[in-house]
Each structure stands twice: as structure tokens, then as C-alpha cells.
Amino acid sequence: MSWSVIAKKDFRDAGRSKALWALTALFVLFMAGMAYVYTLVQSGGPAGAGELGSLGLIFFLISPVTLLIPLTALVMAHKSIAGEVESGSAKFLLSLPHTRRDAIIGKVVGRGAVMGVAVLVGLVVAAVVTVALYDSFDTMAYLGFAVLTVFLAVMYTAIGVGLSATTKDGGRATILVAGFYVFFELAWGLVPTGVYYLLNNSFAPGPNTVPPDWYLLLNRLPPSSAFSSAVFQFLPGNAGNIAQYFPQSPPIHLSKWAALAMMVVWFVVVPLVGYRVFERADL
Amino acid sequence: MSAIELSGVTKQFGDVTALHDLDLEVQDGEIYGFLGPNGAGKSTTIDILLDFVRPTSGRASVLGMDAQDDSLAIRQRTGVLPDGFHVYDRLTARQHLEFAIESKNATDDPDELLERVGIPDAADRKAGGFSKGMAQRLALAVALVGEPDLIILDEPSTGLDPNGAREMREIIKEEAARGATVFFSSHILEQVEAVCDRVGILQNGELVAEDTIRGLRDAAGTGTTLRVTVDVLTDDVLVAVRDVPGVTDVTADGDTLTVRTESAAKTDVLDAVEGTGADVVDFSTEEASLDDVFAAYTDEEVARA
Image (tube, rainbow over all chains, first blue to last red; front, side, top):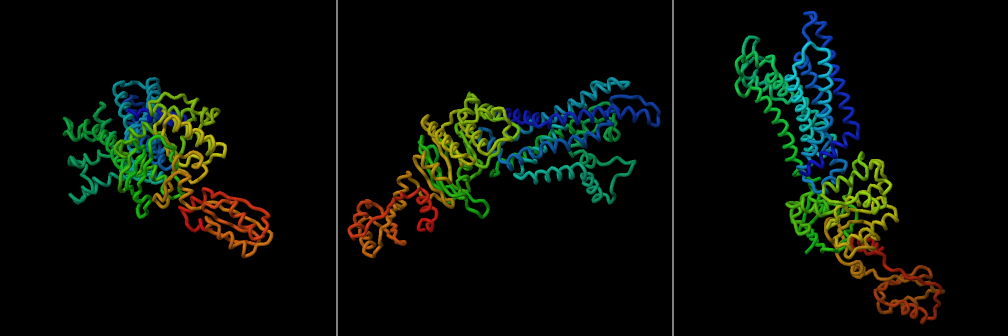
């Protein structure tokens, strides 16, 4: 259980560095701010004063959340291992009886907790705003969203730590996480499109055709897409394209559980790859 | 039992061979000085003992356990002051110690340890603002946590003033008296001379000598040097001194003779000088310094100069 000692130290360290406070302030402002902005959007909408519900807010939040949380988590985590090896504090840490595996787990837990707490506080404040200003508040849906959002934050922290463990150079760690983000979150759309083009000689399925399963699945693979798919499918409202294409129940690999499983895969696999490299490295 | 045993350890970083077929044994309970110029491979050796670095070939064992397979158990019983380490800037001195104590499941009192290394007032200061010497003292305190059976100190006197270095030596002696084995590396000879039972000299990744300080001094053959100034230096004086048994070399500079001896008594040399009728104006003796010993092993040219 030596990872818990490292996690505790890391969490305290973040608290002392003001990073925890800055992040919490950021997410409070962001979540509560969005909750307020959504009231303006709805009242100014074409339908006049539409019904102001928490579910609408959640779907409104998805895309800014998938932008902000991954970026802050990667910024928080990307130096966690590489930075320590580069500066020499890893020698301090690993001269004590900790395995390298414990170092990685401790960092994921410690920094994941920092991100998780900051996001959670933001969500709580946003919930208060919603209860005060909105016509309806769907507690279960909001809770589900909160759980998935905290998981997104922790998952992306784990990805950052995992990538950090693959290199001894802080600068390279920065490039790695930036590359990861660009490839999986910004450029990934080209992958299913490219494959579709090779197979069908057109870039995307027509508006009235149901795309093939593999095409839908590929689109759901990146970490943020796995998250938004899970939000759409676990929460009520039949939002998202899967509900349109499969009004009854989707095939298992396009189900809500598959989306959740994909999040778990990201959460586990990237740190595992990092561990494999770190374990073999000369410090 | 030996506390540290390296057999046939070779470590290559790319094309560079940092250690070449190194054999080394440190006995339980001894203070072993690991000497060598910078870049000789001292830190690499220590990194292998701690499993920071894996040998290309050969085996290392610490406290009777395999350095790679049982690294965790080794580090549980070992205190380390690493070279080129960096403190956690935002943690205070006390928090560093609390972290180490908790990591080792030890029961030490952080304040007591800080008192011992001479920085009790820094307990609640963040280590990021520490001078190199203070950081070094803090790292020593961390190394002492849990009464380790083996203490590994990599260049421990870096950044310490002479007073600090002396206190460091006192602590090393206390720990050895408690029964701990101390393995410490240095490129500074006085550090080693004052405390070590045995010394190994590493040069270009190979152990070029290993003995007690006295043994090394004898083996290096850099005995005593006499400087004798006479009123008038004649060839007779030179010949007479050269003939004294035990004198290995005589050189003249103006009226001063520099006489290297292995074993000759200085009175024999002085008697020989005065036997020629010359008057001794001044004379002094120089014991071969450890630097000469060190240089004799690590750089032949310097030893001759």
C-alpha cells in the first residue's frame, strides 16, 4: 500500500502549490457560469422562454467539458513522472521503499484526487445555481453526469501520468501529451472518415443511411467521445446518434456499457504502457 | 556476510562503458570509502545498488539480497543520500522526514533527526528555499530514518562547509558505531581518510586499488620527501645523499635538495650531508599526501610531477 503514501504526499503538495485552489476556482467559475449562461441562451432562443431543465444544461455542458477537463488534467499530470526524473526528486522518492509501480499508482491517485475534487466542487456549485434558477432539476440525471464527469477528469489524469512515465524529459512529456490530445481529440475524426473513403469512395454516410457499426464504433473510441457517448446513453432523453439509429437497443459494442468500458480501458491502458516503459528505464 | 557485493558488473550507456567488469565487496559493519574522480562511475555503481539503473551484465547484491529482484526489501533497510537529487520544493523539512518515516514504517521523531543534522530551525521551512548545504543535511536526515543497516552516501559533503563536512563525518562514525555499514563515495580525499576503514579507488569504471589508507599509501610508493637547504651545494653532497640506503631520488635546485625516500631516516640523510663538510641551513619533511596517493593510481603523470 505504499502508493497511498505517495498519493497523500502528492495531493498535499498540490494543495500547497495552490494548484488545487486554482483548479477548483476554475471549475466553479466554469460550471456555475455555464449554468447561468444556459438560462440566457434558453430565454433568448427561438421558442422564447423554453423550459429550463437540468438535462438541457447537461447536454449543453458536454462539449465545453470535454474541452476543458482533458486539457487541465493533462497540464496537471504531464510532468508528474518525467518532471521528477528530470529534476532528481525521483531519486529521493525511489531511494525510499517504493516500487516504480507504486510511484505511478500514487501519482494517478494523488493527482486524480486533485482533479476530481476540483471538478466535483464545480459541479456542486453548478447544481446549486441550477436548483435556484431552473424550472426542473433531475437529481438522478445530474448525479449520473457528475459521476461520469469526475471519472473523465480522473481518466485524463491517468492518461497524463501514463504518458509522463514513458519519458525522462519534461519537454518531451509536454510534446507527448499535446500530440495525444491533437491526435485523439482533434484529428481522430479523420480516421473513420478515411477508412470509410477507402471502402466506399465517399467521405461519409449519406444523411438518410444508417452508418455501419464499425464506423459508429470508431467514432466512439477517443477518451472524450467515450465519455460523451456514456453521458448520452446513461442519461434519459435519448440524445446522441446511437439512440436515433437504434431506437430499440443498440448492439452490445455500441451500448452504454461499451462506452463506459472504453473509458475504463483508457484509464487503465495508458498508465500500464507508461509503467512498462518506466519499469525498464535507467533513471 | 558482505553488505555489498558486485561481481563482474558492466554497465554500458549506448557506446559509453560506465563500469567495466567491476568486482567489489563491502563487509558488514565497515565504513567503505568509494573514491574516484568525477565521471569514474561511482554514481552508476550506487544507482545499480538501488536498482535505479540495471547492469548490462554481472550481478549485484546488497545485504545478501539481489539488487534487482529484492530492491524493495533492500531499500527498506537502506538509507540513501543520492547524488544529484532534488528536494520537493513545496514540502517543509519536517514533511520530507514524515514522508520518509511513513514510507519506511519507521517511528523516528523528525525534530530529533533535524537536530542531529544541525538544521532544527528549518523544520517548518519549505525545502525549495534551502541552500545546497541545507538540502544536503536534510537528505542526510532522510537517510538516517529507520536506523538502516546500510547507509549509502553519494558525495555527501557536496555543498557543505568544512564544519558541516566534519559534522557529517561524526554522524557517519556514530552510525557505524551503532552497527551500520556505511558506503560513501567522494572525490575528496580528506573526507575519506578521516573515517574510512577501507577505500576503493575507481577509475574509468574499474577498481584500480582497494586497501586501507595506510596500505594504499605504502603501495603507492610515495614515501616521505625531505627538503634540505645547504650553504653550498656540491656534487659531493649529491653523491653522498644518493648513497644513503632507502633514498630513491635526489634532485637539486639552487642550494636546495629534494630527497625522496622510501624508508631512510632523515638523520641518515642529514648525517650524509654534513659528512661532506656542508652546513645544513634549513630542512623540512613532507609526508606524501593522500592526493599523491590518489594521483598515483588515477593519473601516473601527475604522480611523477
